Length: 232
Length: 311
Image 1 (cartoon, rainbow over the protein chains, first blue to last red):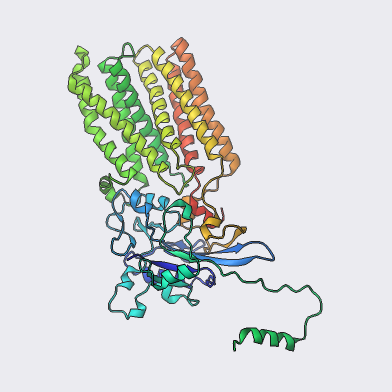
Image 2: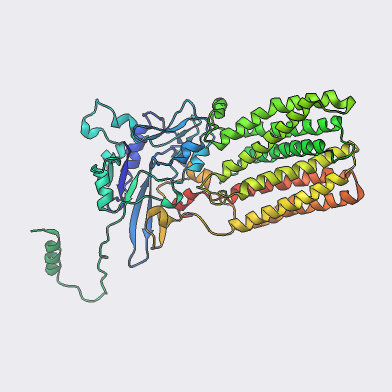
């Protein structure tokens, strides 16, 4: 098995729901707690496994906002595991999930240096490295119904921009999505071979720009819009 | 990259210590320095071991969870950091045997065969440790400014040249003839300075991944709208730095002036006049210069994660 995520850059609206649900689940999960520093102060920050950043792609009038959620890519060539001197970082043979053994980590930061995606963050309270577990404590929990055996971020996404599955199976939902939507890896030139894939924004015509002249009557515009929306 | 004081102290001090030991053993085995018998060698070896130990101890200060530091010796097959630790620890019993050999030979002047052998092994271990230090950085593909053979080459050359300058000082304090040592220091400082210059020219070239390859949108201009954070996280504190380009440029001049040019000129003067005060000045300036050089090594390194923050 090669478990991982597919994230749709076309539908992600950057609402940060996945960030919140990730933190909520994992702070009491296997690698928890996810310590907050200065939570009610001037500069609140803390450990997070998942971060969403928003970008403006291209320039006016062709510009569009693209939100890019980032968590551990569970790379096939996981340099973070290679550089670890203690053996605390490991990649599971059975499903490819990269984890950190909190009892072995000495907090040298070298694995975070080796990660190009910023997936690893040091927890100053425990002095150990923490990272996305792909909700390993959810996806195998037989107490949960099958539909709920998915990472917290995937379950919570209101636009269904996140998909979880097995990349080794060519017919799994994630493999099909990557194939049909030209899914891509982030920074492929570094050769880490990340398992997680991103679906690029669909090519869509730009929103019409009004030249400032007389507008069509409202009824006509409403009819046009209705014809576009309602599929007969 | 964030320049941690403990790591700067570690690499400069243990580099100089291992370099000193390497050069002392090499020179004493070849008998190139007249007047440097086992007693004088012992002083230099002891000084080198102290410097290396100070460095190695300070390196544990940057660990967030040092109680697990002993586990770092179990990944020799994959991790350069583990290799460095193993070579550094193996070094101690071997150098102890060599020091016992020198102690026993201080009257007779002839080193027993096991002393000779342990000296050779210790110098190889010192060399391996410094090389591993360089490789820890050079093996990271995420930091284009480090991912080069020039990095371990610089670490080795700076260790050897600073070690030789310190050896010149030790020799001066013991009244040993300084021509060979100061001449060698001068040559090594020039080579190390040129290698560092080569490194600075090489990192001046823009390189590494961009936001375009990170997002798979290869043509359009991309700029960050929101980082999704209201304050600096671990990623920003560890990987980005706000040192202005002007300061960096000034510091490079300082590295050259304090770390290479003045010590080299001092060594040239020593070569011709054998003044004993000058090597002390040279050592102090060189170590200060190397501390700035190591600080710059971190400050100028640009981790790929910065790309996601539009930097």
